[in-house]
Length: 245
Image 1 (tube, rainbow, N blue to C red):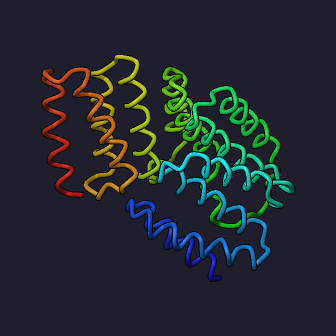
Image 2: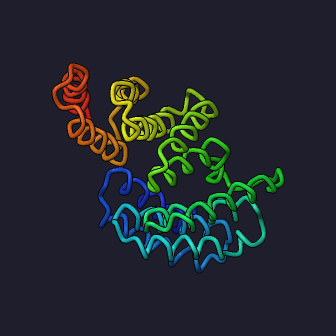
């Protein structure tokens, strides 16, 4: 277990808990060690995490710069699998910056490149990136671009491809689905979908990023339908589940 790996794992734990300042400290150290290691996939992984953290910090240009560094990394140049991962991170960054054309172009490129990736043995950390994750990230990209019907379609497809045992993955995608339904005006269905997040998590604490999505849904619901029975039921359910987290 190398120094870059240890610090990146520590950074990821902090990101999940929304302790973003400490996460940045760990990740800066991880970037230094990754560069010294000259291991292509390790460097790629650090840049991907840097982009994610910058997004969480709302440092949008930094998120794009880190994603572009991942896309240009030696691992991405050698392997379409890593090229796709870099391109989808660029798409996410463009979507956050409001560049719809750039986001959709990069996402389509990520899909095309992934389809060309050969079956190879890759580092264990890369196992998360497959068709289900690509669809999930596509749902996020389309939601940021306010293309909510496409968001819903991609979220459904991701859920169909995600094993039941991957609770957190399924819960995160379910939250994206609920937000897409809410923004399309299907408020009652969206509320039922959002409640499924708690069912999927089965009493486990909600990580910080998931709590943020649920908070977004809660505010949106009460902007649209504050006096409905299902909104009041949702508020009761959320209060109970929030206290467990």
